[in-house]
Image 1 (cartoon, rainbow, N blue to C red):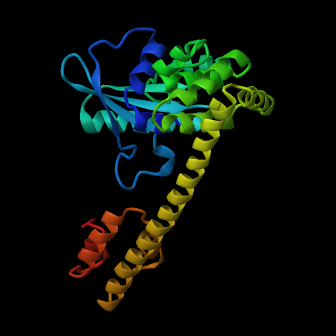
Image 2: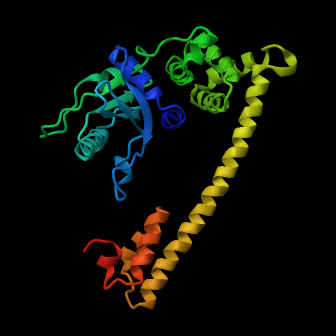
Image 3: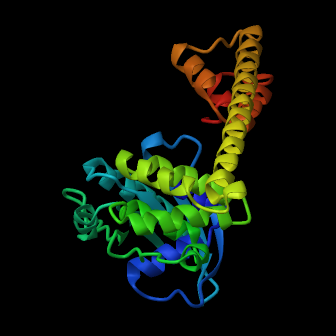
Length: 295
């Protein structure tokens, strides 16, 4: 969900950074959502949750990587080293890693400098945990930054007042973020707290158009949107499969049949543009290295 939050409002990254550093971000602006992929063949485990670029007071851009950590994971050290180093090397600029942690013990663990074994790289994430997230007590607090408010309600799910304040305020957000964020909050709460929130929401007045009723309508719309998105995803998957078949067919027609590993590489490719490139190259390639552009 932080990826979705960053996509809908990239400036959210600056708010996280300010909370983690306990400082203002004056002079930083023009936040933009960036691709999470360093290059087309990056393994899935080295993809960040979300990446935002911002322009600093000096006019230069920096990158902010946002990661959500729900447990300590030694493997993340290597992923972060690869991603931070890769972005710095590619763009020749500063890279800041922000780790969102739902519990304070976990936040404390990630707040310590991290160094991969036998390495010279030291990772110092900017950690945002329960202690850094403000407690929204009024709808105005929630509407000032719905993204921060939702994360705070999840981190402080034992505080029913906070959860209720955030949950009911979602109905007052004028765009679709209200239903999307409410659905996320609802799904992340412990079962007992979720039941309490639902009971409170069902009694909110006016009876003819309560925030609960509005939120439920929005959740129904979200379910429909998800169904449409799944249908679009299936159509896109079918198109990619047909593109892969075309690449293989052209190769076989030209007596350049790929071996099993190459065939699997083509079939598993999820980039339509890359498949089109391979199909074009296949028409004139001398061998498979020409097709993959590896000569």
